[in-house]
Length: 358
Image (cartoon, rainbow, N blue to C red; front, side, top):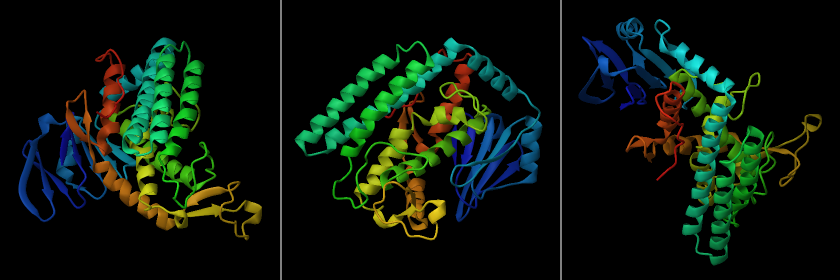
């Protein structure tokens, strides 16, 4: 049970919520502690996984115009109960107006890229602090310095193409640095650049899987807040592409996905046996040889179970949020950032400030 930014988050499986006069009462299995919260303090109730809400509470929330949002245990958006349309349509209208304003759109896109590059630098600098190899320490610091230079250049970009160009140059440097963080004795092989759709090696396969989980969280967070996940400021608009979710996940990729991938590989929790090489469709009845980097690589079912289990624990880790001046679980960081973005779009904040760990 967590109250954050006027929203109540319930993540305990089997919990139940009931209406008690003008308050919501939360019952946790095998816990007799009395937990109530005045409804007037809440703008939204968000539940993850198997959580029961009484009919009386749902009716009261609908009457009050208080959102109730259901998420899967893994963080995927499922549905929302919404009373009469009030603020959200105005928020989406503000989002569309901002998207049509190229200068305003570019300012938000610059912030998104700044957050991504800054957090990428922190991963490299942390790696430099942790390594005992002088050469690697120097290489990582040099790459972090290059990323800092690109960060400054990106903030001078006068259009989105220039901005994406700096993002691409930074990614090339960053992934060569990320490769240095991996234990060379891992049987999964090295990280040789970034490959996707499909990933061509185990490390890229693991990164793609974790990026998918991160994007799912970002998408769900935007849905909770009432923003349109398909209207992005950096990634624009394309049919079927959740561009704003892709925008929002950028700042979280290095810390939430890349860092977990490095940890899983270096601890050998994920090994070569947890990947399989997918043969081309015309050779589906043949067995692809291990180490064939021309073919798509995917996690096996056992591999996915390990990653998902670690991801669930990783999401509970508390991170300091400078603007809120409090610790926030990783699972809720995308929600917090979505609300900050919404406040910027409504004109309540002058800029969108990306999250960066302290």
